[in-house]
Every structure is written in C-alpha cells, then in structure tokens.
Amino acid sequence: MACNVRISGSLSALDAVPTITTVFQRGWAVDYDWVADRAVALRQPNQLDALKFPPGFDSDLEGALRGQGKFSDFTYFFKNGQYQRVQHATMTPDGASRATADAWDLPDSYTNLDAVFPGSGKKSQFAYFFRGNDYMRYDWTTDKRSSGYPKTISPNWHTSAPFDRDIDGAIIGVAGFAAKAYLFKTIDVTVESNGNPVPTGTPGSSLVPVPAYARYDFDAEKVDFTETDPAQVVRAWNGLFPTARRRPSARHCPRVGTRCYRRAVAQHSERLRPSLHDQLADHVNGHDRPQPIHPTADPSQRSP
Image (cartoon, rainbow, N blue to C red; front, side, top):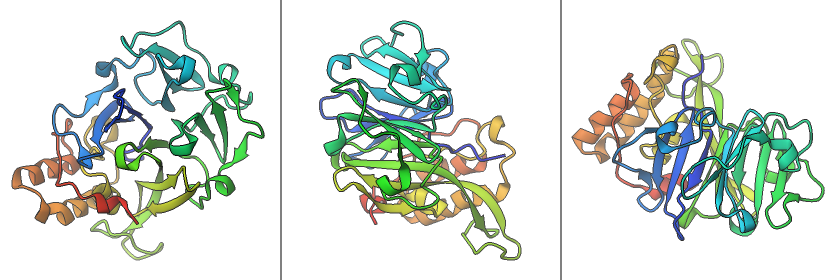
C-alpha cells in the first residue's frame, strides 16, 4: 500500500497579499507560511470538514480554485469529475454540485482529473486541469477554455519523466514564491535499509512510494527545479509532511519508507530545539495525530 503522503492541492488565504497557503491531502490540511518558510505551528493539522470544506468534497480532492472576476465571491472544490461552488464569506454551498467538464468547457473525456490549480504570475487569469499526460487551460476572463486546448504536458510545461503525466496535485506559491507552481507526484524510489536512494537492483534495497516535486515558473514558462530525494523533499517543506504511518489507513506502508523521513530528522537535528526534534520524530514514528512542528526556516532548501 502506498504511503499516505499524496499532495492533492492548495488554497491561498483570502488576504489582499496572502502569505499563508492551506495544503490539503486526503482528508487533512496543513497551513504553510511562505514568509517563515515552514508549516504553521499552532492547531495543525486540521481535518477538511473542520475547515468547512463542503460535504462530499472534504477528502481526496482533485484540487481547488479561488474564483476571479465576476466569480470572485466563490471558491470551487473538485472531486471525481464533479465540482462544488461555495460562498467565500460563509463556506456554504452555492447550489448543487455539477459535472466539471460541462461547466468548465472541458472535453467530455475529462470525467476524472489528476490535478486542478490556478495559474500565477503572468498566467494568473487561467486555471489548469491536468489529466494523464494532457491538460486544459480555462480563462476566467472569457469563461471558457483557451484556444487550442487540450495540450500535452511535457512539451508545454517543459517537464520530463516522472513529471510528464499523472500529477497528484499542485501547491501554488505566494509572497516571494508567487510565480511558482510545485507539481507533486508520488513516485517509487529504490532505497537501502537507512532510507538512502540507491540504484535499482542494489542488494537489500526496497522500492518505496515517496513524494517528489517539480517547480514550474509561470513567468519563465519552464520547470526550474526538481526534487526526487525523499529526505530533501521533507527538508524543503519544513514541517509540512505528515507521517507515512500516522493513521490506521497508512499502517501498512513499508517500514523502510519511514526511514527516508528519519534520515530527514537526522539532517534537521542540529538545527532544531530538542522539543521540536521530538515532535518531528513523532511525525515519522507512527503517532495517529502528529503534533505541530516548525523547524527553523531555511528558504535556500527550496532553491536549486
């Protein structure tokens, strides 16, 4: 069974100049502070229903969007080829859920989506719908798809395998990272007994599912960085990732998979207060409900 670390998407705060993003996976969410470059320390993580995500759209989402222009009073949640529109102010549903493809001018084949997320930078007027190795671009200003879509991900986003198809979800940067999209995908990595990546076929190695990401720059229109080392992913996103074994649904993760996270703990240990080190250790040792953590910020860890 895959480890429970699949990033589904994100929503930025409604502030005029947001600095906080709510990152969600499965039925849980963690607030990430881009200025501090770490997960928010208090009252984290939260279940999506406690954050008033609408019923039926409070787990396993395809993504979420903040409306723009004449739709700026609404937030949109996507799941299983359906979407639910809610009022910003009250988080109450605005009518019944509807088929995504019909309402967003997508091809009929887009019955299920891998990732839904907003553009940013010079692409901020658009929303993106990823499916397999293709994607659609929706234009808020015209309320319809952009001309010439769908297109293939790899040549247009300048990605290579494994980020050329089947993306799990995206985190859209704000503040100093406002033109960036972080495309996450769960990949299989061969590791030795201590969680270090090794070549396929190495004696005593295991294949484990881990999170990886590619960073796309909307202004430069290219991927400028990728990270597939699980320990480096944990380091880059300080405090974001829940333990691979924290809940009963994930208890069957390969035990070697947690060693990737223990290695990240060891790499962090000299920079953490003892109490925070213990909390991060809890994150990877199987507690059902992880405690809030916030290692010292290190923005360079998210740069090439």
